[in-house]
Length: 283
Image (cartoon, rainbow, N blue to C red; front, side, top):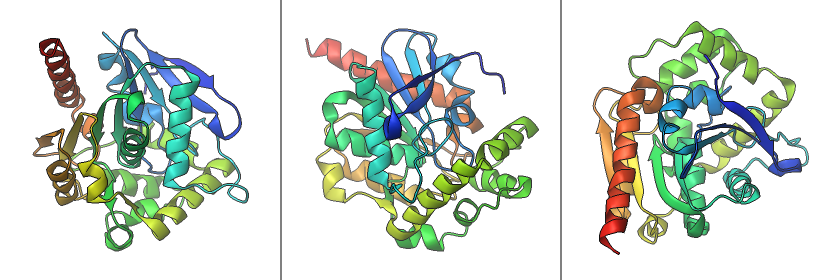
């Protein structure tokens, strides 16, 4: 993977966040998913440059991932709310105007929670393969989630994760090697085990009544062959969210932005353009 983007840090202690920045203009914040070795680069290396052609893109490493803060699990709980706190602190520490949030999987859940608790920070919300209706039982009984929960730090284990996350995608050797190297750092191992332990015990779900109250414009992107987050969960979110739209990719899995980056960017930017047209029409 080639990384032409500027690497930056902001915040201190548990709020410390590493991010990649590219372009200028309206801010777009990309939040990656929660598989072992994932970070802002591995999830978004194909699309940062595309989004950054006419916007300011900030791809952030989540709490416990990449080069962001990794507090000791002995003194810190790696809960869903803690990841959302980290994301909110990132936006506030950079004093960003309301931003377009784009979140995959676990990162999508954090984006949803932030839009629910602090809507003034969010211009729009795009989630793909998102958690949000993944109950504890769903996570612990889905065999396709098992490679993520039981990752062993090996190349074979990483390839099993990427196979579960995609429909028909051969990961480049460089991507596999990078994610393995990221995942086997001692502090990353501890943070990942704590994160997955919390997910096993709690799931990642919001009530349908919470979605019904969500006023931020939301676009749900999903791959029909997503084996980690079933299509039924995405449809449930769209059905109960008043200001929601959806793009469904028929042949893709959980990582739409990697499996079809051009199609993903086109779907998301079309959503943003619709919002711009609505704003002009309301004046």
